[in-house]
Image (tube, helix red, strand yellow):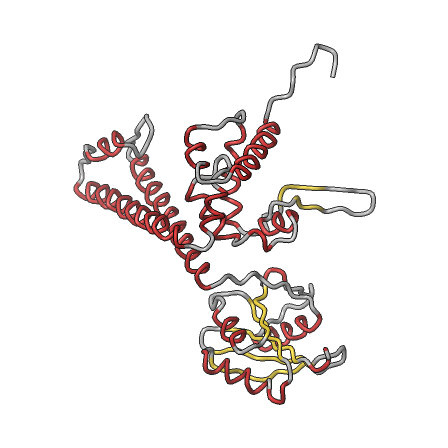
Amino acid sequence: MHEDIRFVGLDVHKRQTVVAIADGGRNGEVRQYGAIETGRSAVEKLARQLARGGRPVRFCYEAGPWGYGIHRWLTALGHECEVVAPSLIPSRPGDRVRTDRRDAVKLARLHRAGELTAVWVPEPAHEAMRDLVRARAVAVSAVRRARQQLSGFLLRHDRTYSRKAWTGAHRGWLAELKFEHAAQRIVLEDYIDAVAAAEQRRDGLTKQVRELLPSWSLAPIVEAVQALRGVAEIVAVIIVAELGDPRRFDSPRQLMAYLGLVPSEASSGEKVYRGGITKAGNRSARRALVEAAWTYRFPARRSKHLLARCQAASPAIQAIAWKAQLRLSARFASPPAVAFGHR
């Protein structure tokens, strides 16, 4: 039955998609099929042509700017389609020639061999929420960048603020700054306006996230995750938006690998070397978790903010969160004092 399957590799670009086919079986032919226009009608027409006679067809293409549209078009027609992680595609060390046709043929061949790693494809509603969360992350970066530009301009002209920045007092101090030259006053006002515009955009997107959260299918998971220390509402939304339903992972090991939180290793023979985390997984979720983990430096306790977040969680979830806090806070506890001369 495997020999009847056609494995199709798609090298997708903005205007055209290059197609290659690998026939089933170990010695099946691998050939270039041609190029089609990148669009729904052309992709569906290709699928119908390749599936004539009831022959099963399996498609694959690299994850990229086109997102999951092609995957959804093909699966709606009843075909299997995998969106492949580009960084995990095997490559030969001496292969330094890359063309669209070579890439399509390579995808078809590796797909037949089962050596490609598929990425998780979210549902459209989940993808929409994740897009909103990522847009907010871009806005947060824009605020940070605008503030750094203003601070750099002031530092160059020996204008420093000795107390906590970006408070009401700091903004009042900015409004009272004076410069001798008109051009510098214009630059100052422009930087201040840029900071205000970036903050307004960030706050608007944050408001939209909170308003749409109750209607999200994964809102109960967001609510449960907030029972953990250091995970407030926005951090919980970021984690769940990037991870999806955590039940899709078969084990904690798979979850840690997805987040890039497993240690790197370069061992050979009797020599064993383990380094820092691989950072090969989802960057946004990993950053949110690492920031939340800093709160476990302090002794375990339930603050009033944590208690307020835990009210909606079930007693079982609260018990799990408290158990996790006890275990993680103990890792950062200082070692007990020992007598001089003893270990």
